[in-house]
Length: 155
Image (cartoon, rainbow, N blue to C red):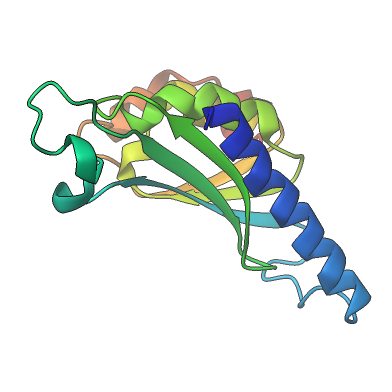
């Protein structure tokens, strides 16, 4: 299956499940009223599941990829999946797509692997916010060069 098809299935299923919530009486209350809260996380397959069963004996067999998923905390539905065909690719390779899909007033919650200065600045520039644990190599002094207006904007 092509990655774009699998990504579309996740997005379609998320929309349909949200419609079902509306039919059954509306979505649950917002966690942070006025903001859309989403968790962003990546997942690598476990060591034992990295290769298709039929290909496990072949040393040249391709490894499956990685997924970065976006979970809406208010509805507990996965709304987006960003697939990486290259099993060795970093989760950060899809962050430009995450920013492109960002909605105004959206709060992204993620682990330290997403603490990348250009990503955080782009989220703020897109009208979003973030709660991300600081990575050890992302020291506070790097933020000192940010303009004072950027410090007062979302993010």
